[in-house]
Amino acid sequence: MDSAATDGAAVDSAEFTRLTDPFRKELLAHCYRMLGSVHDAEDVVQETYLRAWRSFDGFEGRSSLRTWLYRIATAASLTALERRGRIALPSGLGSGTDDPSAPLAYAGAEVRWLQPFPDALLDRESTDPATIVAERDGLRLALVAALQHLPPRQRAVLILRDVLAWRAAEVADLLDTTTVAVKSTLQRARAQIAEIAPAEDRLVEPADLEHRALLARYVAAFESADVAALTSLLREDALLEMPPFLTWFRGRRAVVDFLGGQVLAGPGCVRMVPIRANGQPALAAYMRGEDGLHHAHAIQVVSWRGGRVAHVVAFLDPSLFATFGLPPLHPEPGLAGGPTR
Image (cartoon, rainbow, N blue to C red; front, side, top):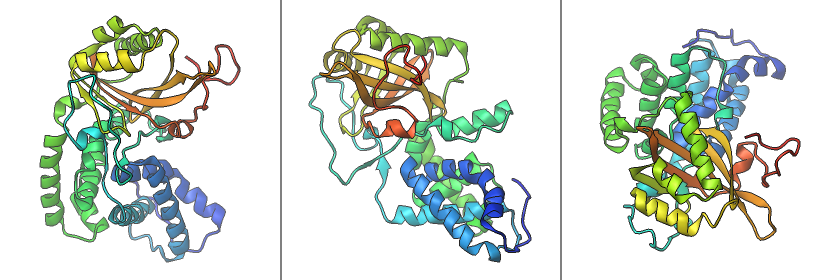
């Protein structure tokens, strides 16, 4: 943790920005882990900075500025969690099906869906490979989804201790509790996470050239509607989720038959743009419409295990494209300013 602190003297807005802006991206990631929503996390970070500005004259420097901001952000996140229900993925709400012809069921308005986190919003100042891997691992979609099952304070303790590597005493001070309570809470949280997100769901290092090639093959299979090629890339126990649909598919045959019958209408129907989300490979899928143009359709977050696709979460929410800085229409090849392949 950093040790930088101010002397509590009054500062103007430019000075406040200079002192606090270096922590904005990591606070956004922290609030996203707590809340499971990029939009909610952005709102809470905005609230954090407003609270910090209003009370900055009273900051006495007894802790670092970073710790003080985390205290405000965590408290604001806990308050936000009290006002809404749990965010989830379809797999957290019911059992999947191996029947590719199963009707797709929508959830009611009371269900709020987990959102993917654009890697572009992460703090990339660190050049330490171990730090970068830990940052990515701490945002992987399976972990963030599992965190949403924990009670809010358990969630905060596990994130601060196991993801951000804070000491127990620091977490106790931030949450106004005891070190013994933090250790007990952490033990319960770890046990529950181990059941929900087993260790084998850990990411394959995305910089590995072999897996870049595998992702390129996956894109080619989708864009050419090559069902055989797609089949060869999926694990036998592959999963496909598609929020806002409650229905999700388990098993390679069910996934392939559903995609082949409902999504891959023919070569050129889908266009893909490689991106990154939650520290792992992701794709922006554009679907060809009746006008012949490819419209924003879904953000796919892809998890690999053993050299094959293990899990695909396709977020069928075109509004997410703006969060990733992507246009609503896929530009034709060669157009200036369009996504690069």
